[in-house]
Image (cartoon, rainbow, N blue to C red; front, side, top):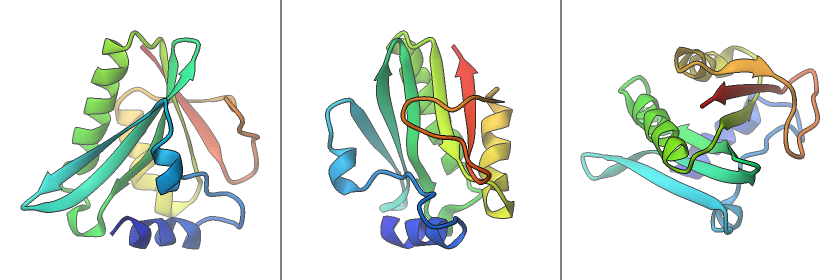
Amino acid sequence: MLALHLSGMHANSPPGSVFALDYSELRQAGVTVWMAWADGAIAGIAALRDLGNDSGEIKSMRTHPDFLRGGVGTALIEHIIAVARTRSYRRLSLETGSGPAFDPALALYRKYGFVSGEAFADYTKSEFNQFFHLAL
């Protein structure tokens, strides 16, 4: 299920522009993964990576196509923000792409107060990717 959705990300991104974590990377220390379930099926996943310095990065937030616009993304982002606050993070960041395929995710991030900002961690700015931050 996740591989199917990630293939869509690759289809909407220039080569070398997808920074989603693969299965082995999601199992690293410092990365926490959650799954949202609906009717016995995985409706979505999200991951939070500890960046140190009282900050975290939202990674691999995905909703299965069968559950789009059903509140899965909202539930996941609210959970991540709540966990980040319990961890005393001062900032949450994320990297995402540009273009119509990313507009629904961008609307969700902005709804929760994320604002456009500078590259962070190991990312480098390009014409395609963009960075968002939420002060906690």
